Structure formats: C-alpha cells, structure tokens
Image (cartoon, rainbow, N blue to C red):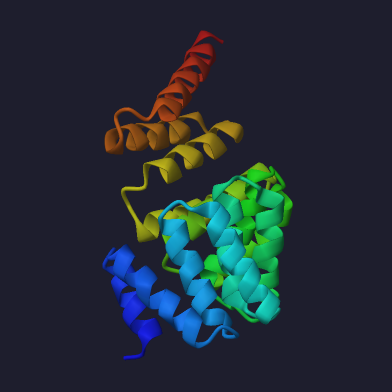
Length: 223
C-alpha cells in the first residue's frame, strides 16, 4: 500500500493528524502530482478548514486542469458554504472532465434546486437516478423538482418508486398527498397524510395537509 492509500485509510479511520502527516510527505515527494493536494484538501474539509482546503484544490487544478476530483472537492466546499452558483460550476467541470458518478450529477442538480431553478435541476437529478437507481434520496429530490416544475404525473410516479425502495419514507407519502389534494382526490390525499403521520407523528406538513383535506371534506358534506 503506497503512502496515499495509507493516508486515505487513516482519513477514513478519522486519524486526521497521522493522515495529514502522510499527505504532507506525499506532496513533498511529488510536488507536481495533483493527487496529494486533492487528498489534503478533502482532509482539511473534514477539519472545517475551508479556506486552506480551497487553496489545495485550486493548486491541484493549477497542476492539472483535468483533475476531476479537484473540481468535485471544490464543488463540495462551495456547496457547504451555500455558494451554489460557484459550486454548480465546479461540479459541471468535474463531470466534463470525466467524473461519471451519481454523486456529481446529484450535487449539480441540488445546486440548481437550491437556487429554485427546478427545471434546470431535472436532467442532472435524473442522470443520478439512472446511474444509481437504488438510492431513494436521489429519486426523492428528483420527484420534488418534478413537482415544483409542475410535472405532477411524473412526480407521483417518482414518489411511488421511492416508496418501493423505502416503504417508511414519510415525506414521499406527504408529497403524494399534496398531489392528490391538487387533483381534488381528497380521500386519497387524507390516506397519504395519515400514512405519513403514522410513520412520523411530528410531521407538521402532513398534519397541516390532513387538516386541509378534512376541511375540503366538511365543505363537500355541507353542499
């Protein structure tokens, strides 16, 4: 196992001081190799040293503009700082440089979601679900963007797929309730809200949705 791999193992074991020492040795031995700077940047992010981490990622990119992992690390750093536009540019660059991973597409989609650009988020979130179809968090966020972009039929199908992966996903039931309510399927909406509350009794949105559904039913009974 080379020093880089040893340091990554130590990093995963949260032995940060020992990992830092080894990463530092890697950089000293190979100062023109971007990998050492990328790994040190990832370590610094775990230590909440964002400013130093940024410098290491940027140094890696100076050495190799095509270092996809450096662009991805920079994207994560900017995302944590809520600089979503800058983060999106970095994630896109990582993808353009060949990082064909679900997380990269998902994070790029989430950058657009955090800027309320629902339709722009869709192709990237969809791609994340295609690469990793068994991750319910990817599917759920894709469903939310579909709903917010008013593609309600596709959103409903997506939330149903979320429940196939995780039958205890209270937020998926809640959103199915909202869609049913929109289509004035009041009993169906109430059933979804009830299920969400059964799974998560403190689900305030589901409780509010159920209240609205009951008001609709009372109004219907009065007519």
